[in-house]
Amino acid sequence: MSFELEGKLVEKFDTQQVSDAFKKREFVVETTEEGGGRVFTEHIKFQLIQDKVSLIDPIQLNQNVKVAFNLKGRKWEKNGNVSYFTNLDAWRVEAVGASGTDNPPPPSEEPPTSVNPADLSVDDEDDDLPF
Image 1 (cartoon, rainbow, N blue to C red):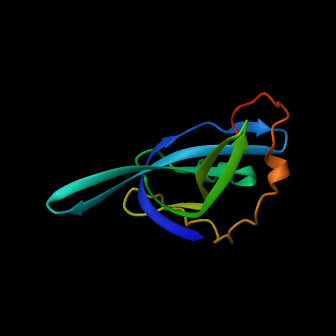
Image 2 (cartoon, helix red, strand yellow; image 1 turned 90 degrees about the vertical axis):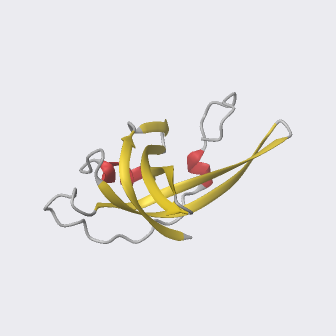
């Protein structure tokens, strides 16, 4: 599933090398919505994976952005316990609005193909997390 969201970039994290075959970088976008005389603020955390981790580099904190992303969900079982994880996998990030730069946005990209789950495994079998 592919979605788009606009908001203000409020946090950029360093790239994490999860395993030899997998790396990710997370960032947070703040959105605000008015309803019933109140303002609701949300902080949405996205991740960039593999060759997309540098897409956030040219964007400055507090700059307005448009994020194209896929909604991903995974089931993970260990020792008889089942957990579910949801990720917002960004595949395009571009500056928008008055706080944007004079540079044109990068060319439009197609959503990435699925990652082979075998590539996401961590060699350490004692690790309690699936990522």
